[in-house]
Image (tube, rainbow, N blue to C red; front, side, top):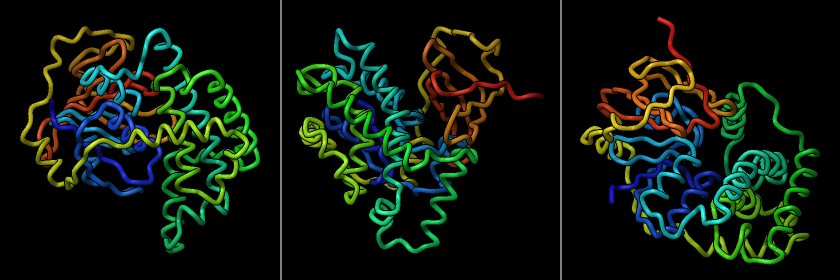
Length: 311
């Protein structure tokens, strides 16, 4: 099995989602710690602009967005499955809801004064302000959900998730699915990173028990790797051959075109490169950088905008 490299930082909720999936599938991986805020020169040398956390690297192939990363890991290690039958479709729907709406409400709740004090304990004021400015830039200037609305919405979502646990141990049945890993990470942040606010979970004891089961999965076996080593891995590798992938042209943009791919919300930095594959579910760009050589950067179609670069 090819070496799995995760570019992440310890307090990243979405990175916790993937770390736990590594544990569930008993995968060994390499851990590259990246900065929480820009600049991230080594990461952007790999991605060409995409800067959300985490990013997974396999040789000279770079995978963006946890929905795609989960799909790649599923193909590499099909058992145990993240998409068990017969709830494979439903589990994806719940996962998308959790990654977007539950996450947004949870972060609005978590980043009230008591939570900020927990998250940034020991961090100087200028460090806190730099983080705030960085995340505002990632939102493109859009306002964060207000604390009041975040709190009420988060409570409602926690009750709904708890209701899903009344008859079985996990959200979609007796074994975990992608829904569990997506729902877990916002609550993990509350419990582990903003413990002063974790009392919100007391009203849903079934969820607290479920969180204990999820945490016990662990992160698998991992070793530290430097970002310089990861760049050298890319430089010495050859990207996957994508020439046989079926071309699904939804945009009227031919393969070989110079394009940009940008998230449709949060983390709006574009990645520019040559479109070398477009399948039903994935877009792949080829990029060249003097530090990485030729790499392929993979994105899911859902949640990303493809545009041709005007000549």
